[in-house]
Length: 163
Length: 272
Image 1 (cartoon, each protein chain N blue to C red):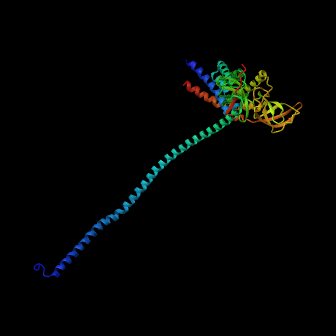
Image 2: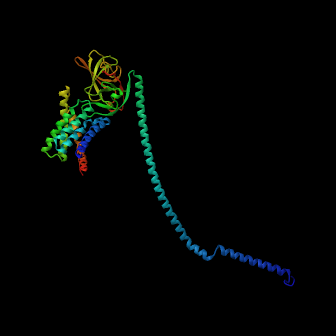
Image 3: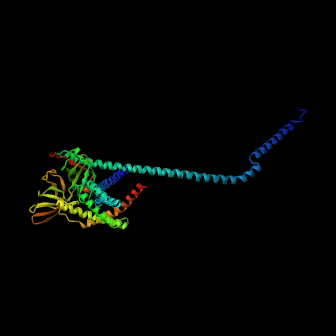
């Protein structure tokens, strides 16, 4: 029962991140650079240290995100799972529990996610788009700046729920 | 009577002396009542003390009542501040309502001027990622909105519905790089396709080199894409350049898609 509730809580957290992302960009369109769902997937990957959580959270987040946007279903899921797996591997090599490593993880993961998504658009949607380096770097920086405090907030929530 | 008093003169004297004594006595009694010396000294000594005491008491009472007044004033000030805040909040709400009413009235005027059936919708969500330009509206299949329904506002064309659920729909904005709108230039009557660039500007493709396109010319929907009805405002031409086969025409989109709140969705007959 307790385990089931935990799954529900994680699912709600993921949904909240996607909804928050959509609401924020409704009022502040420039915040579309932010990828809150990716931050949630990365946190679950690092905190749970389990590939299962990465795959489940990546799929759910991707499905929700695609449903609320113009992208075909699966694009975001594929991106999130791939980047989540890389983060999982990085976490097994480096201890990602410090400010610098967490910042680096979110920054690099955001850039990788953006590049992968662009690649998928070129591959599957036949888009001849330029890869906008500056925009991708900004996106990485914004995600790292917002993601870091969010990681600590999630840590606090998890700790208080355990206590 | 003659035996008691020897003469009338003596009687008069007696009366006068008695009367004088009475007056003297009465004078003394009156003086003793008004200015008794002991009382006067006592009063002289007590008066300054009393005066200063009373003065102190009145100062203390002034301070005390001043403090009470200050406290009451502070409380009243806080209460008035709260009241002002409440009124200010209410005013903001009223102003918002008036603005909303204005928008809705403008939309209604637009709706009344259109021959096509349409419904008013609210924007409830933005982009879920940075790669697309889309909005989510609060109406869906239940309200007669289907895929490819055009979405407009008084300033011009906004986009088209690409996904619709029962109660909401995703709208692709004309600024989206994947979007294409059949357009017609008002004066030159040249036709082309507007391609979004992810911002408030767009490029018009396939404009013949023979067409005399002017900067500032209105760009309207051509209706050829069978999504947007003919004649809706899309924007204004900002620059014209020559290419080999087609002209290089850029335009500014008339709608500020970043600030959309209420929109009009043109109902489309279902293909099925």
